[in-house]
Length: 116
Length: 116
Image (cartoon, rainbow over all chains, first blue to last red; front, top):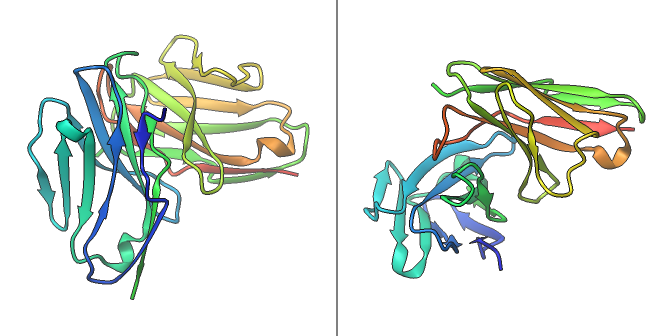
């Protein structure tokens, strides 16, 4: 079974729409970290957020917000009032205590296209 | 802060030649560096983890004699693709982490390798 599942392969929205990118993870560890990265067409991965397993507080950063729910093993990412510049592939990732947190386990990514 | 550079950004080489890719952490010391490979429209695949001054740890299925990794200093890691073949053509991305444990990985801009 996949450890990090991003079920949405591609999402297409019109500018100013809100969009939520889903991420479901699987781990047996009680301590772990979750990440979101953005990969624009240029290719570079841009770090967006890191959340540890003991902090379930939702976080908001400008138009970005994250909803972490341990009960459903989900760490969803919402972009409010999307813009064309948000078009990118977004990856959710997990690092676990097993293995010393040394590895990032990536989901397959969700390609977001925001149209004018 | 947390800037990682990669050089070159693109390289085209003939089959049988070797190619060296450099990864540098510009504003922090990287205890650990990681090398990933990404196929078109796919997620990132971890190839190896390297710690400064010690041998790299390769993921299963990655040929260590084919992909030589050197992490000679706290700010520089190199990946050498030896005797490259067309199937080695890919997007190679490095990341660097400031310390052990659950530190965030910061990614370089990637290197697109094309082997003719």
